[in-house]
Amino acid sequence: MIPSTAGFLRQDFEMKERPSLTYQMDMGAGRVRGYADGLEAVKQAVYKIIMTERYQYVMYSWNYGIELLDLFGEPASYVCPELKRRISEALLADDRIKGVDNFTFDFLKKGAVHVKFTVHTVFGDVSAEREVNF
Image: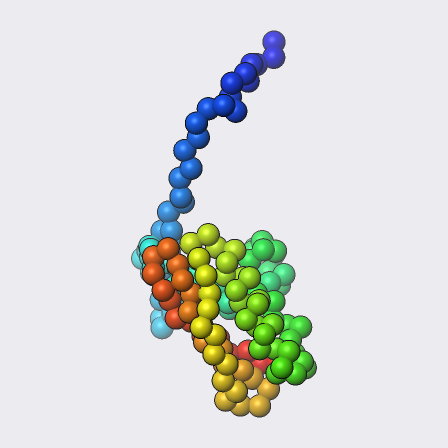
């Protein structure tokens, strides 16, 4: 006997957002301690995404992280706009993040750029930064 699926696709489905509750990373102590939710969880997700090189770790999906390794040896005129695009692309994969803007680039030492930017989330805005060697 074959089960009937007549009318199954005409049902009303309710879409629920997944909770953002996650383990809290204590960066100062180098430990995982307690839980984080809401804006604190998104801040932690932003940090983890921009600090994880894409395609380098088996435990992460190929859609997670940011590609920076191929920027080594490239001129600053190429690195800055490419960083802007890559950071935005990596962070917008998280559905809690609605936009990334206000990029500033500082060249504090030779062969490195310090990038600061603002991440707009469903919980509020987050400032983030990363130093990238090129």
